[in-house]
Image (cartoon, rainbow over all chains, first blue to last red; front, side, top):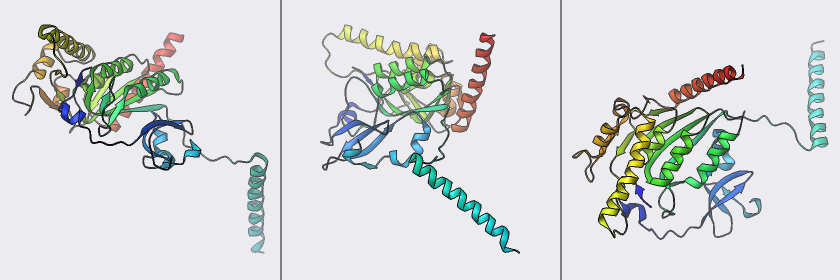
Amino acid sequence: MIIYTPLSMEDVFYNANNNAERQMISYNGKSLYCEKKADGSFEIVQLLSTDPQDFLNHQLSPGTIISQTNV
Amino acid sequence: MNNEPEKKEDQTQDNNSSSLVQKIQQLGQSNVPQAPDSNIHVLSIIGQVEGHVQLPPQNKTTKYEHLLPQLVAIEQNPKIEGLVVLLNTVGGDVEAGLALSEMITSISKPTVSIVLGGGHSIGVPIAVATDYSFIAPTATMTIHPIRLTGLVIGVPQTFEYLDEMQNRVVDFVVNHSNITEEKFKDLMFAKGNLTRDIGTNVVGKAAVEYGLIDGVGGVKEAMQKVNELIKTNGTQDQQVMQ
């Protein structure tokens, strides 16, 4: 594997010991990249969609907490 | 006398609201107006382009395994007529970047890219992969040689392998933009421009002058261009039908 970037490899592979568990979930038919919280709920990190209208939906905005039962 | 028309209005309003209540009781829902579906979809490529190896979580990444199925969906969905690619990337995996570039360039629908902020290294082939490319006046693109990471066992073989990898990127950029191979390699191996590396930092207008990018512009220009391409695409289809 070759990484082609102006950043130094130390910057790319620097490990901050961030053990947050991140995973892809499907919510209301949309794919979301989420961080799992200690209580089992998910916090949205990134919305994976190409439809610009999805980004106007406040329920899908980053930082929103989704309870485990809705996933 | 004056009160009578108001009373009538009240009655009709009552009728309207009661019919709505009935509708809700019967069907359990009412029609909520929704935003119309967009015929132009947006693909944002941000941070590091992540490929074969998962990067540590402090990196903001765009994972190619997420984007490739989305690109197939865009090609398949008849409601989607055009694609705008937004780029603000610091580069990343060569294979993943080239895979994305090849996917974007082989889409039959009109595609337009905008380089915002930065489109460095592997961002360059992704930017030129679209039918028409824009760069924001303040955006930059770093063009530099591919560097080696990891273990070197045989020096000549490693050099050849690296040279081959680099040629894949150079060939793609030269074939999909108006820059010549000579000029692109000149920029790639220029000395004294970057503090820690050889190469060139190309800013906005300069990228257009070198022939790398088609025009300087932002969202307005990109949307105009993609709509224009959709129109010409439509008339071509009609001619084929006739």
